[in-house]
Image (cartoon, rainbow, N blue to C red; front, side, top):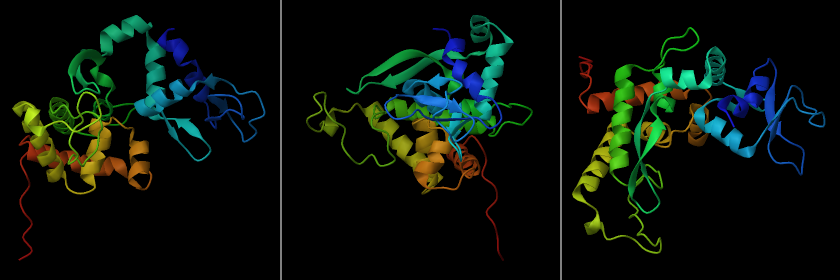
Length: 256
């Protein structure tokens, strides 16, 4: 199935007043509606997997009435309409190798679209607005992610890594002495970087940079007001860039 066919429900969602809501009892998935009466036939249906993927990619986000399309979702539709799918992918996607840690702690390198990470999207202008973060901020976030991938602690993702990693069988802790020095060094670098961000902001970096959670979902998990996360993310990445010596810190305030 082509990307356009996969996103056909998103096309129908991209209308004023429309939202995604769970289908009536007994049916899996979400329907595209424009009112509270879900007994009516929906304009389109999205499977549970499609909705989960769209939420994690930032194409949609929860709204007052239901799940609504985001500006990133509209931008994705514009790209799909602008050129044939293969041509667009060849011209614009940033295809590269991304390290992924499997449940056994083995690092595997897989082909991935690097331009689809939340930080990459925030660092690019869209729909007439400037980029939400500076290039140096995106670079700092990617450095944190690279160190995290190298630490072989990709699962589970938490900001508290005091729990020892599990062995291959999953039935007991692995001997810390068996962890290669490079992995232990990477873990130390990550924890130092999160500490430099500070309490609260460290959790936001874990959610956005490491879990690749959309901003709306990150705000809800942290219990923050809607649309407050982007300002906090810029501050967290600024501190991260200073920690990595990518930026020079400002002068310390002198109250005297």
